[in-house]
Image 1 (cartoon, rainbow, N blue to C red):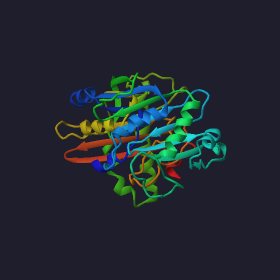
Image 2 (cartoon, rainbow, N blue to C red):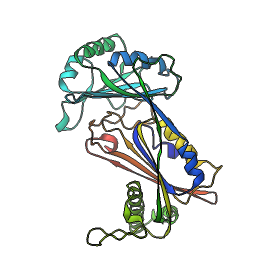
Image 3 (cartoon, rainbow, N blue to C red):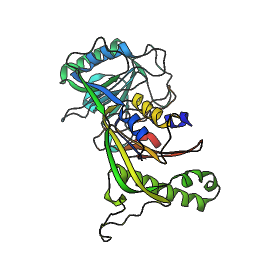
Image 4 (cartoon, rainbow, N blue to C red):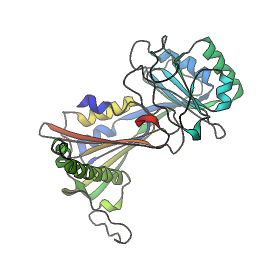
Length: 351
């Protein structure tokens, strides 16, 4: 089950919410997690010279991940993913000036945007569902150097899992701790009956539809808890003409703890969070949920487990939607879980 859970979080995120029925042991374990990342302003060629020191030639994942955020008048952006592959998302003018082979995005509203994939490893993966893998050789280096001469410095967010002996000049280190919030006297659903019923619902269309509706109500509750909605409180006195909400049943009255991390969140830290939640050294609360939101401006939000496959194409934009949520329950040596994903417009993640 742990292997399946880890398949959900292979990309950088900008916000993670962990919500659980209040438990001091779990709260302490999660509150002790510190997330570190760096920001700097420099040109792309300079950053890639630095990043190549930390790109693994043998391991499936390298030790560095980064995103370059575009300026207010540019549509260009890029991402260096944990596999050591650089994805450029550039407009028509930049694409033609670079002279590197890429592919246009498949939506007519964004046909001027092109994706270019460059490997910083010594070798390129075999071609799969894209036209060309480029290797970071002399042609690519020269093209990026010319590009750097025409544009201002990038604002770069990056994480490196190794000790940084040769840090880039003017880099700023950021340390993020989770923001803890407690909600008292709330209606907390008991999700185990819904999660355990999946095998029974799978054989009947009507039962499956009812089960999906019930499970959707659980994820709705998670979303409202993340917003600290007063609709969850037992003493909620909202006018029913304004809003009506009933938590999923069965439910009980109790306290909820939410912990939120915001910043440049590497999958390394999502691993740490799951390790704490799934630890057998401490009792598990009756309900735990993890919700993660991607960086909308990144041209990469999801990585296929097969290293030979290109990341799904997407349009980088501030309001891009890419969220997954996980509900987890452990009881008497048994465990149940369910996950849901919400992918927005102009994203080929689901075709």
